[in-house]
Image (tube, rainbow, N blue to C red):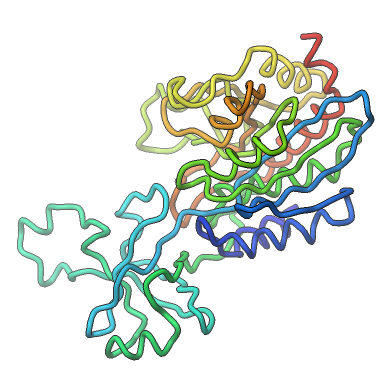
Length: 349
């Protein structure tokens, strides 16, 4: 699973450009499912047929990562960009990036006015992304264009997954390549007799778009979204927000975005909690007032699709140095796998 996660995180794909991740999913699942197809928006849908009298379950994880896109190129060859997804601007400054141009990958750095040339009042202000630029070493606009870079070129961070101590890893795009790995491994492992739709969704970071269309087309009986949850077990976090921790197991979401996103139906939460208790799987419960997931749109699709979210606790989310515990990822895989095998509990809890 570590090698799969490394492959997924080191791949690149901002919203709308998820090709590399889609290819990995297809390669990993083609021998474990009955059908794989790609819909009109770009979602990849892997179908594992179940028994006729069993319900259908959609497993969803989004393929896209937050990134950037070329907006303009000035006469001196410096590149301005727009943000795709929820960036905290300070995390962008002085990072290396990859521009995915028409002639292949071009590397660059994000820069801004150096502090040596700033006035005192400028030093006290946070530098905004709109004041940053990308330097690929070009001397003018023509050299940038000759390198295959133009407005619309997608940009990702130049970061690779690295191992830390205590079975922890750090890298870019753990949100949500962790979810993709979770979905793939759970599908391979489970002996469920339910029909399973494993869906790699597109454009989650810019509006939950792929989940909306794929859920509408599939209309499953239930859905489980594989995601990441904000961990609060590090300095700078108030005590009231420290309840989600690394190495404490899978996160089961009760509600997110203070109820504006998903409010999981109680029987879905009871189902997952009961399976976790029966199987001895470590878990923790989440109620958040922050962001939301694909489940927010899946659960209100058509006449409603009862949905749940299982997440891996993640530190420093939406940066190039996200951190997770592989033990938590394993707990999530086991919980999804066993929950699918005990799908009948949904009706009896």
